[in-house]
Image 1 (tube, rainbow, N blue to C red):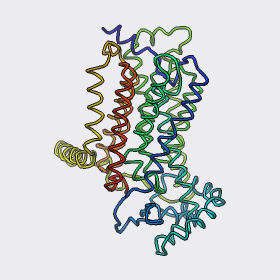
Image 2: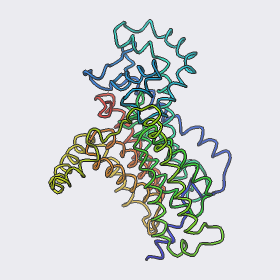
Image 3: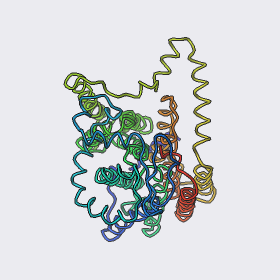
Image 4: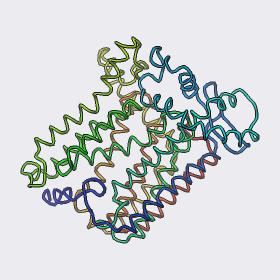
Length: 460
């Protein structure tokens, strides 16, 4: 049994290190079409309710149909954009996300030639109130961040499709037409989640909660295939991850994800890891490259912290200021660790029940059950590294959120996208793609209907 597991785990995971034969026409078609379901969902959410007005949140209405919103952080972001030097010299809540801020400073002027005629075209359909005046003044900045958000949704879908091998033909996929429909269905399911509904049309980093879980699973697979991957490719991904931490601190989970993948490879393929084939990297080389990757991930954060502290002489905003993560250490010092863990666990479970809609759990699990009952389960006799990576991604995000001690919907609901990816992967493995397509279609429809009728739980 262990040998069977090892053999199954050794199978290449599509989209990373594997090299399946390509069919140019089929591949081109999939590359051309998988984006359209995602883009449809993104445009659809322009016309859905986001959040009720509060002291922090101001809805923006254009032509009584397009519904956008501003929150406190997005207004602060615009204020800092107006006086960019204050971002570096004064304390602010965006201090730990310099790459995100600099993007806006650079991209907003680039968007100006688009923003001016676009606002002229829509100005006649808008009313004149204070929130809209602010929005008009910084319209190019908001457009720049909308473009970034849309790019992140598409990138998240691309990562998911790449992990599953749905952007290429050949084994393990057979039946290019069904594979193309499965890719389109998964694209729509990911792009119609509550996170996209609530945050794609908001100048804020919240949308990165959609990308982080998928990227976490992706990095597990990178670690799992490190023996068969060029070191330069691993280091390039690590350097990008380091920069992403300065966009959104949650991406720090990519570092343990990489090492988790290496550990899973050692667990499932011990003999091959310890006695590598000629084309494989040795365990020593893999670990050395992993250490270099870790340095590349951590170095930008360390460098930015030192620059802010010693050059600009301002503090760096960290979530620990609000008690996040440090509650465990505080409870340990006070001798109330068990009580604190029990209390936080109860609050965490209650928040999961509050934030998840029934269909976000019931529909994917019903699809998984149908696939296990009807599909060819003999193909699940081996360990599938993609499913393993997706499960690790779910556990990593939920564990991070529990340890955070602050249970906002955006981090919890982000794992809904991974449930859809699991459905697609399982449908491919058991050769029942039609069931997978139907399940993902039902998930998409439920999410679109919910977005039309209710406020998004993540739109804060």
